[in-house]
Image (cartoon, rainbow, N blue to C red; front, side, top):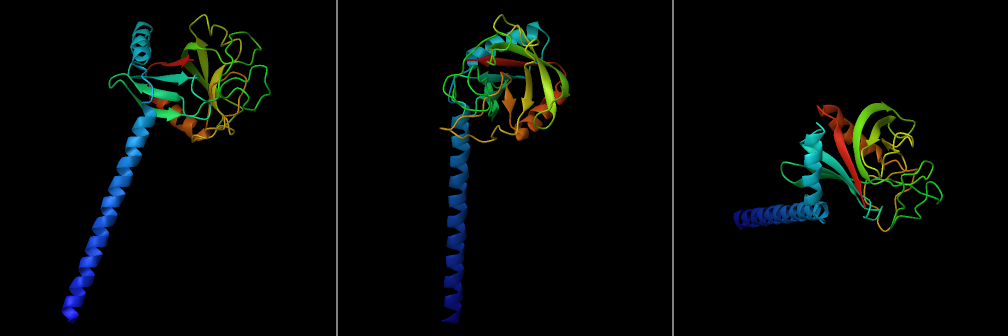
Length: 214
């Protein structure tokens, strides 16, 4: 009787452990699939093809580029690291847009940011930027990258002091339906994201393309 009881208990333990492992595997698979779905909601392959040609023509980094899609609600991740070789998004981040004539630091245009290339417009500008000089920022982790606008739609980037930097107010995770606080036109990311992006940019042998679309 005692031996049977021990075997019965051990079998229960084995069944419990197996059930736990199976449940954990299903949960991890669900999370991975959800992440993949989140990263591939929109098809950016046409942008990727044009971006790769632009990078090769201008002797920029040709393994990846950054794409910011301002048509996406600001409470969702919309700054993507796009891998050219595999034609896929490998990382995604929260990013702010300009407040325009709205109040700085608020979220009044979270659904549809105003776009402008005018000096003192406090708006975001769409177009291709080359990420260049690394410098010291007064925001976030104190790191910034100067953005050189290469299109008519963002040609005033240098005059407007548009840079890539981090900001304590930018959340690291999605907060939809809430919006991300708006600045004066710079693409600002969370401190955690900037540490990751900064590491990647420093490892790149050539300047990197940032393409802002809407």
